[in-house]
Image 1 (spheres, one colour):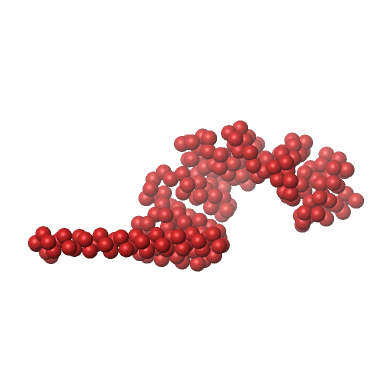
Image 2 (spheres, one colour):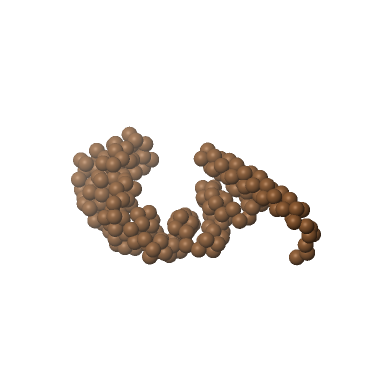
Amino acid sequence: MSIVFMKLKPISFILILVLSLSSCTKMKVDKLNKKGMALFEQKKYKAANQVFSEILSIDKDFLPAYFNRSISYSFSSKNAQAIQDLNHLIKTQGYSEEAILNRGVVYENMGKYKLAIKDYDRILEVNPHHLQALHYKGISLYYIGDFNAAITEYDKAIKEGLDVSGIYYNKAVALDCLKRYKEAIDNYSKAIKIDPKFKQAIYARGVAYYNIKDMKLAKANLEYAKKLGHPKAEQMLKTIQ
């Protein structure tokens, strides 16, 4: 590298100028990042993607933009681009729990369940108590047809303290697939206790009651699911009547 200025004073001046420009760039990047996040919150995903891309055209090493753009890409069904950003982030940062978890979710959205499970397992090797990784691994196992393994992961998450309607509903669905209807009903009921207007759970509980020939409770659940707007409830009620 050639030295342009030999005297100390000019060199100091140039360094101050560079630092000032760097500060201006950082301010611009921070402002754009806030703008992109605001657009994302408004569900303007395409506009948010453009803003995060603009940030990376200014500073390709600004890692939060890769993460934020990956999330925005996934919400706009651009899963391949989301994976590309997350891969870059993981390659650059090494182990990043958030990036790996989100890559697993995107793989899951793409139907690449074994790759999703691989990412969830990577997190669980570091933190066996990670609630989301346990839950999401269960979902991927369900989608590859391993219902018993899915239930095992759901049970681990519940034991670790995950107490949300979704975990009980997902466990119930897996139990339904194994024709363990009474256990499924118990778990649908737990989901409904947490979320009394969970129409998918109410409908599914009605179908489970139908499967064990309890027509009275089947009808009651399906009528309530219909009232809440479940699209299949009316047709199922015709089967009972």
